[in-house]
Image (cartoon, rainbow, N blue to C red; front, side, top):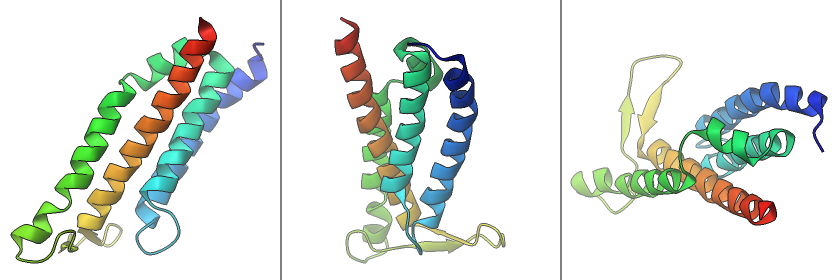
Length: 138
């Protein structure tokens, strides 16, 4: 059942939830949050948009196959293990770079790993949601 109120609200909530998911991603290293929770919030934003507007519009809005998000997430998460090995440390040893930018601070391999987890969780969750919606459509 189509609701114009939910359809209109979902467009604005999508943007707000995506911004909140990125906030959770960047906050996650030192405080509660991280890639997993951020990815779930982003997937929930797309799920709300799908419920309000239908599967066709949600897939068009995403503009990328969830499988590509899964692949990119795995690649990022795995590549975050390499700088520690290259520096002579153990696997997944954190390497930090001070950017000199007060707002950004230090950036390191844990952020790369969390970003990979973010894309992985987002892709897997959306793949499940879109697959279930396609089954329901048939």
